[in-house]
Length: 193
Image 1 (spheres, one colour):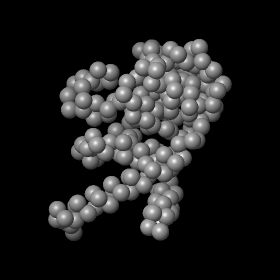
Image 2: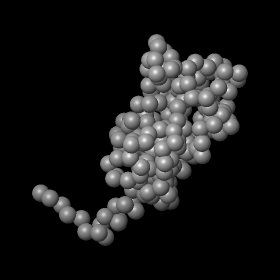
Image 3: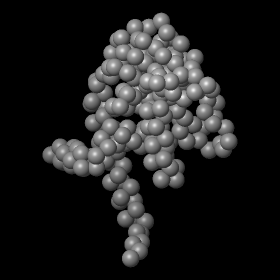
Image 4: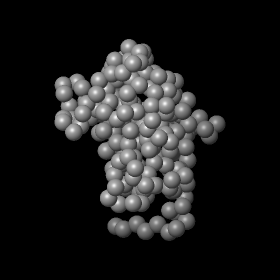
């Protein structure tokens, strides 16, 4: 059986899912005080844009996102204006416990970590992608999942990209569908009261 939705129904569902994403983003913002400790992977990624071919740094029209991931644990993401150490370091300093191990690639924006209160290890992707525990494969896995999820929408409006990103973060941190349903139900009920 094929169900055809008219434009009114499509707009209704789009509005409904937009509101759910707003609730998720708001709840994640309330929980932002969570600090990561232990072994942390850091990386940045570029999303969207119209220009084909050019990838990564310098690719036009893309949104730059920074992420932290506790090895085997949760992820945190933030849209950033650039990948300089002046932008990256304050986020790491605020979100990561001192003396934690921080894994990164060889991007110069992470040079400041070499003389910080963190133990910093780099992985040179031009030589290898992992060296025992020294890798950033977890955060790169998150980038892959987030991009795959967003691709389903055939383009995410730039004005609402942050909501889609936070939805991906929330889904990654709560992979069990029953937990997702329980949290959403609880949050929606609290907003209706």
